[in-house]
Image (cartoon, rainbow, N blue to C red; front, side, top):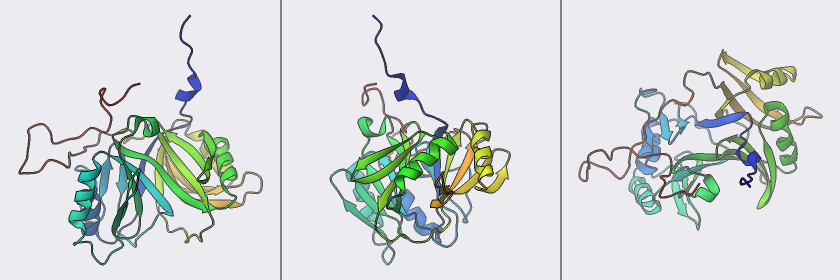
Length: 295
């Protein structure tokens, strides 16, 4: 008899890729020290190469860092990056130059938490196929802190309005987990801590049913910006019954026909320098090899 599979485990829903997190920074030099020198990520060599914006490649995802008043995500970004000890050494190497800022890093059992010069937190994990799939370098999730009691209604919003599967997790707090791509999620974790006002940062995703969510958002007056034929934006996640806003963060929603969908991204090997250079080892792969992963 043929082997039986649970085919639903491979369903993605409407969102097929969480590509970037956009956070304004007031100093491009300090951002370079943190994201490139410290974390070991790669400045995109093709786009946004002046001194007013910087795109940082992390596997198939990115951080967008336009110049402006500092923005701080209410929560943290998950980053898979191989080589814990090398990461710690890189972060230590930039500590002196980042004195007087919010920069910090701490070791935990399962991750290293690094804080950028303006207070954005990243939790850096070793690749883990059971938890993050085949990602060896990338952004598997973005987690937001949300008010107590809002997670169930947030979980209901995304399937109904955006066509994106969502679950309610209960463990270390109540979390609405929204699937935004293969092995990628937006997480909304309830907290009783006071939350700062929303400051304008955003996340971006690609979806396949582009017009359906647009019509549903428009019917509720939730479309906040019409960018072009390939993308639109919304900010408020609302209670489906009352229409009351639950949490605000801008979503840049792109179609799968967007010209930059799945644009190839360069990812350098941060272990390579001019003293140990080895030919053809300049780049690193975002995905695990067959020796690291059992499908």
